[in-house]
Image (tube, rainbow, N blue to C red; front, side, top):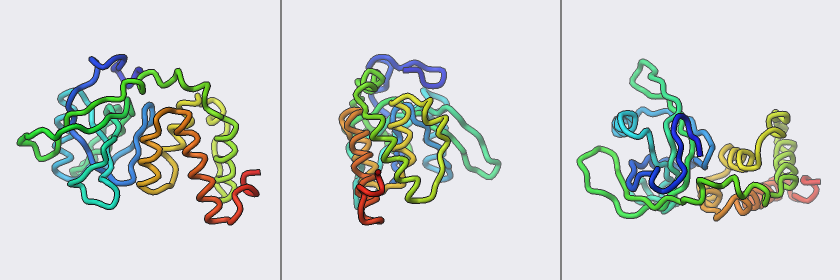
Length: 218
């Protein structure tokens, strides 16, 4: 997988420990891009350290219903591919997703941010092999139904050009669902299951709001 100026092809290309950025409702997936506005001193220090090192940050949600002290067990590794200073002490950055990881034990350091040993999901580095298993037509039907129900528009030319990997992960990341749904999308075992999960969540939301998702999806 090519991310920015770096290639990640095997486990040896990935770190065994990473600084983690806990943020509820934020979803990063492989190949996806997540914009971030960094202003807390401890996280400014985290990004300073990443920029002088391997440019990698681990995005993870707090455990559902809990504080930042307890984190979800699965997150996603991202590379800083865009960085700007605002002039008022903030950083505007963009992370590009590489692969998911499972948190192992926390390392004891003197840093103001937390560092964990991780077990990367190596299969994510070759996720394009899974693209043919995605039901693209069903995914686009659910996406269009959601847009129509909310009177929204999309750039359909860009959607049609997108690969299944980019389409599934981009739609999952931009979906306006809550932390629990975002974590379910992150933890889906493969691309096909993530697409099916996204369709199912969308149908549930449409049924809850509009009463009959079958009508909306036709």
